Image 1 (cartoon, rainbow, N blue to C red):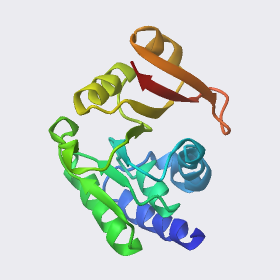
Image 2: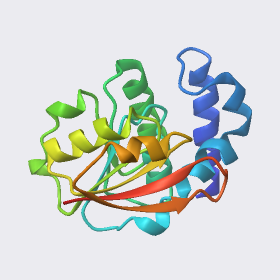
Image 3: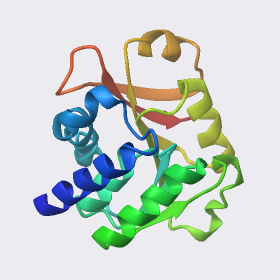
Image 4: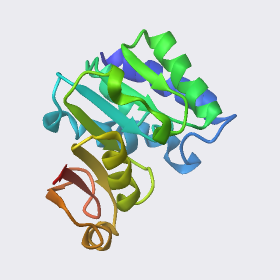
Length: 180
């Protein structure tokens, strides 16, 4: 498995020269800054059902979870260049995941196995993520949140939540959400 992470990093660095997948100042610290951060989700996810990675970008956390052995991940990325990158990673690393290259609001969840679980690392505000969950009938999720998580959370109602401190940085958390 570790060689797949190395292969992924090589692909990321190659593609990042042409399209902006990650900030250039984080490209040399992919293992800690992006991969280890994504792997923090593993204890909170199930192998049954479907995990929807909203706004996958460079594949964090969805591709990383697929490399870690989750075979029920759907990566949703509407940016065409980024979705082409994700498909190339899936092909070259022979990963068992799906890539949905379209607007998340057009996703038909009816063809996927329940229970549904939403994840996201760097996609928009919490209220947008909650609205997407409601629209797609996804009732559980876990999201990476940064410094503004408390103000974002105070604007949301009709949810249960659990705050999980990040094991990597003091100013970010994992926010586990259950819609009511």
